[in-house]
Image (tube, rainbow, N blue to C red; front, top):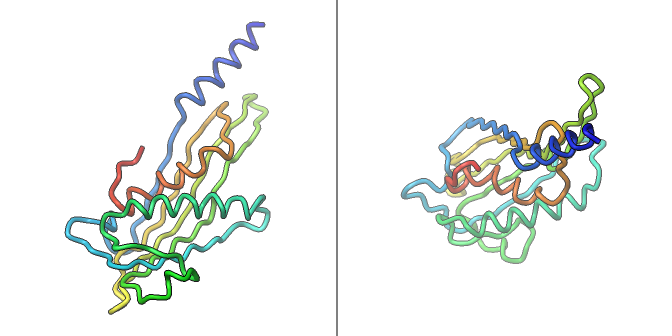
Length: 178
């Protein structure tokens, strides 16, 4: 009875107060992409998926990612509009090309024996590259990894869209890391 109560308390606390690790690497340009005085004009976005060989539910993850990207890009204050490469709207000449490559989007779950516990995480791993079409100037070349969870946390598919948006927002529009 006491062990069950302690486990339930640990699970509740782990999910209410998850650990968060965010790593950003800027190879070129400045973050956020929509800095002061920046205008991207018409934006063409190329989402790429570089899943590992054993990645489960690839179509479902891509659906979640595209929904999150559309929502996040709709809030870009410095773009005149955006279209994904291959869409009818992308036929017009873009001013800026944005490539977003996803390496990981999903929950992770690991069980350890010593100490006996499980570790649950939501993980986002993405690379962004924005270039100006007229001269090929690199406006942003960045990589972000975001993990949220920890011991006894249960992280499923539900938070993935908001986790991807939270990983991209500081690089794209300067929204604070939350």
